[in-house]
Length: 342
Image (tube, rainbow, N blue to C red):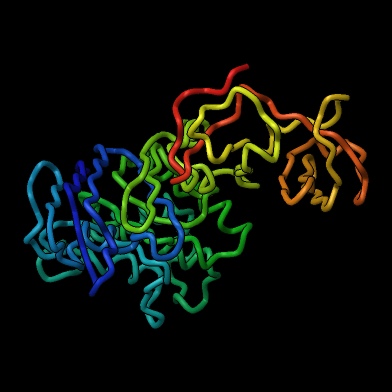
């Protein structure tokens, strides 16, 4: 496997900068996830790394070698698409063997069979090798699609929301499977998604994209606890961080430039004589936990609670904020480093 390095990449489509001066390093054996909403530049970044798009500026390096002008085949990368991209009339075996039967490889059939069986065992698909692709479930088809990328041991894996078309239960099991495979192989993966749960569970590091710019890169916990902007703060966490105007809460001793404050739902505490009075507007029961939506004045915030709490819609209640967990942002949504007074 190989390190991927993107240096000052820029790609425009007409007047729109899909990728804007983006630099990123994915270390050998690292799993990096690009996270952002539709239109943030995730897929374009992946296509630039693969050679499916040519940058207007910047450079791509794989394994220390500049590959900006090389074709996808010359870069030796494997691209896993959102759709399964299988040959429906082929068996699972032939779908997995297809990349190894390319004219340039000239692998003997015995070696191909050995490699396919090795990957099928890794994917728990040995018993399906003679099934046609049309006889597989959605999860099995996606496993074969990932297997086709794994089978030829490329320098780098690029994955474009490969789990998004699966149902919730399958996505959960495939996340676990994909992370296990990556660790077993020591594979280098750049993966894009708009699903923050996928990003949190899969990534060694997450890159937050906004309008083609990489606004923050770090370990999932680091970004969750120390976001650099409102955009980064709201990309991680379910429910997302509450963003509120300071004047609605009457908080003293905030930095003068603080135009917004952020507080995670788990850092809002209910009860207390000196708390802010609010009304319970909604309740979502999630099994062991519960999300309560509170309304006060013209504002609303979410609170994450133990499901054993006894609340009812319309109930009047007080709440306080954990002052040590408050994050302040300026009028542009950028984090203000100075912490609020305790």
